[in-house]
Picture 1 (cartoon, rainbow over the protein chains, first blue to last red):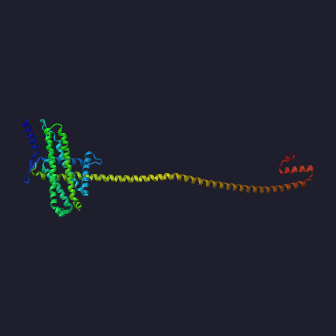
Picture 2 (picture 1 turned 45 degrees about the vertical axis):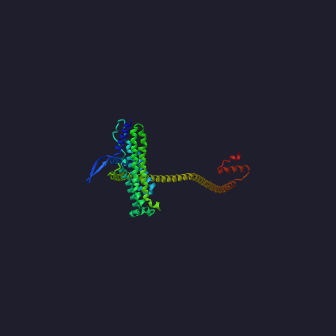
Length: 254
Length: 166
């Protein structure tokens, strides 16, 4: 009996390890290099395709009195604009499309796995959408992009020399810490997103393996829906604050 | 899972592409459309306000006109009455003047007639006197004979002489 239970635990562990592993689906030859395309990259392409298709469908025929999809798109654009402007001031309008893109990408990518049917009792789901944020290369790529925008906005605001001088503020002693911030922020952004989504994914797999009836949909409301939305909000909110700080650093320090 | 891979660069490129595409396909057209719509609505509201203002002014003008129309009508009426009174007085005065003139003319004419009749009468009396004198001269005048002579005289004058008998 004990042995059977331990075997079962091992098989659940194996299944989870298998589930979170990243497979290379195919490779592309580019300039003589083999570029492996993982399932997470394909997942992010699917998310991008959904977003772009929705954008095209909504803006194809704009009406003065908007129908629901157009109203949602208008609300999304207006919210991104007002959110960015609220944090960064009037300069925020230029960054709203970037933040909106980030939000749409994260939301779609995080919520897409909810469409996977739940298996059990010999039923194998015909398809499976795994969260792409379980791949730290994806979250790192996103946070690196955010930090690049932060850096770019700071340099655009005060020039390269001005940016270098801003590292010495408020006192020269702060230089190493200010440089460290450019490394710590993206790492924390990437790890928070990666850890939360991966953790939620593993917990959901455990719940599905142990209590396949009743529990998964309820637990999924928290671990898939709430956590997915929450991580999107946190990531975008922190990105906005980082960019806003980079723009208004002088005002904050003076 | 935790090993570094080319997926990192692909993700950076993916996000950049998605950003450029969404900015062109979603933000630009939607912002332009919403700004244009807001501008149109603002213009329409302004226009409606100005139309309303002018309509109100017009209504005020008409109200004033109608209020004044009563006063004006009263004034016109009073003016007409006044003028009519003046005119009637003039007409009466003129009529009186004319009547007076007619009376005066009639009086003058009748006085003239009287004078003319008096002259004629005098002439006739003179003729009668002459005729009477000639009759008297022809006959001696006594009681009965004088009466008859007078009758004859009257007959000569053209009368009947019967009235004297009666």
